[in-house]
Length: 105
Length: 105
Image (tube, rainbow over all chains, first blue to last red; front, side, top):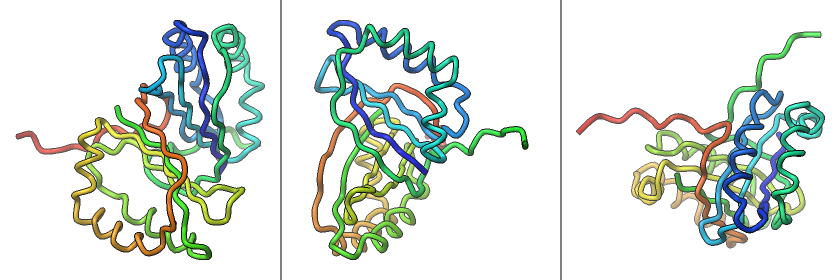
């Protein structure tokens, strides 16, 4: 599995709008096992996103999906920058949604 | 919701044992919506644990559960220290297991 832990900084005063976009845009991403959007209780502009994918390729592929590209286009003007970012290799636990069904080739 | 993102450092050479303990000990924790154990691909001793709870009280309560106390007792000698730790307020996303059923009072 492939994981990402990342902090995003909203343009001041725009965090709520950015959160809505982030939470709307993450349906139906093949290979996405977990995608959790959180706020930083100590910073009014900061958002944490933690992600688990079946593999790194699925994450890269998600960035090409039309709904993700639309989300990125809407989100970009509301993002002031990024904070910490960590790549991980998740091994297991609670809350890993089973991989979505895909047609066999 | 209440979230934690934390890095744990195993005693050198003992990460695999520590991972097994962490992944075994996290069943049946009331209010636990996500608990994902990952390795840091850049540090042979480091483990990331990302957690989501229905509220902060459930997390605190979990530390009193017999199976969690047993897990902590087994894990402690294998832990050399801790790295980054962030508290979050998760709002939503993919992979939040529904709260476990509990008896009504």
